[in-house]
Length: 118
Image (cartoon, rainbow, N blue to C red; front, side):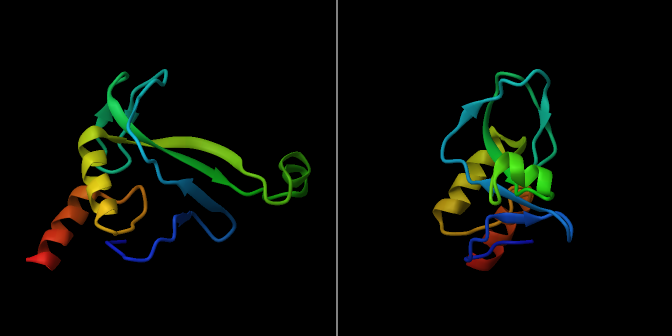
């Protein structure tokens, strides 16, 4: 998608479902049962490594889900993670005022930033 100065903070998956996510504000440790792939660079992240976690959810898509979670309830989805190197770049670009989806390759975005600022 590329760098943007307008924050949208949601990721359209298809026409029928909308996935929302929260921007992390601090590092954490990967404490899952299996290694995870960085949603930015695609590298495997070892358990116990420093990461940032993107908490994701979607709204109810059926009457049954609305009865359980409420009309605007949040149905949790699996977290996505960025490795420490990608997280460092992510936080730097966010601090500069840029917005982008959590799964964009931050290395490409950093290269784009360098092009537009040089």
